[in-house]
Image 1 (cartoon, helix red, strand yellow):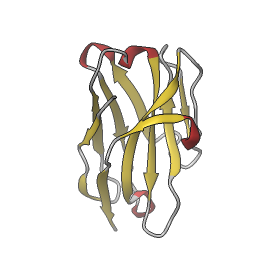
Image 2 (tube, one colour; image 1 turned 180 degrees about the vertical axis):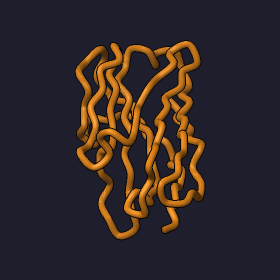
Image 3 (cartoon, helix red, strand yellow; image 1 turned 30 degrees about the vertical axis):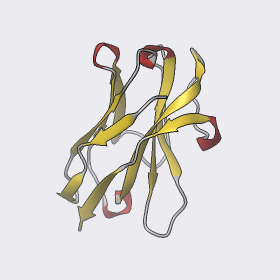
Image 4 (cartoon, helix red, strand yellow; image 1 turned 135 degrees about the vertical axis):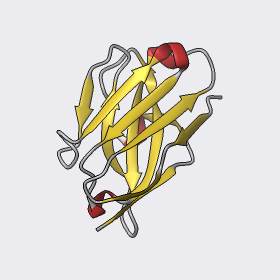
Length: 125
């Protein structure tokens, strides 16, 4: 059983930045792809960014060029640097572990085996 704990959410003004972190338990972190998803008020959960075991990344069009996903395998930690935040970025952000080992970046919620409880990001206009 893998536990994922997100941190770094908060309130920021439009145009500001935040850095999210997600720390994973266990010793298989480096072999799995990791993703960020988000769920805004009244919306379905949506894909934000993914990074596979080798460091290859994929981004949703809405965040391309503003968000950067990265990982530190020595610390079992996933990051997401979010710049130029806009009110539409307001959401609960979840990290998730891809169930496949050493696979390509996976953008589907169905492919995730473990989820964190989320961290809230609020952007004021």
